[in-house]
Length: 278
Image (cartoon, rainbow, N blue to C red; front, side):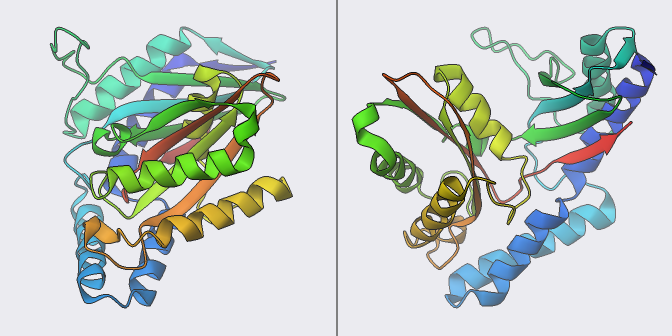
């Protein structure tokens, strides 16, 4: 049995909040650069160039990539042989509070109806997954709401099958157009229950761009959907072109015989995430 002090988790979360907001993960930046290289439509190419310049400035000056520094979605893969000395929830929230304060990051968390700001961007959106061993892996995904607001979920009929899933994903992207600040990254959750499908879609955003589902059926669907999304021609910032989405990942889970839940979680080009293992 390994013991980890809650203070270590707190400090790690704080640093990840700052790091994630100032620099894109390598896979997302690589996908953005590849899109800029192959883009032939002038307006789209110029738009991608501005996004690249913004990333360089943010990283050089340790400033946020985007003024919307998001709600702090924190994912923890916790080994079942780990004992936390203290409160895990309190440590995560304190880490977010410190990180958003020391990093001069915008605090966006409000009561849903009163619209009163909590003042420190807490509480975090914490997802904990137990795994084997004595490891503790923490990932912070700051989720901006320009793209989050464009996300959708549907309870399809089983008879609609894979074609129904394709139609829903493409319909969603076409409907939201330029609103989520494309080029976007798409997380798609299929199966489970109403809430599980949405959680799967969010989890899909954690997978590095270019890393496909291990199931051949879903891997092929990822490839097909990405091609069809890009064929919509929405393009960077809605100016047209070849790149509407940088990546698309699907997570799936068994569901009830009477259901086919599907969720689409949209993220903008600034799909920010940072991880650490302690």
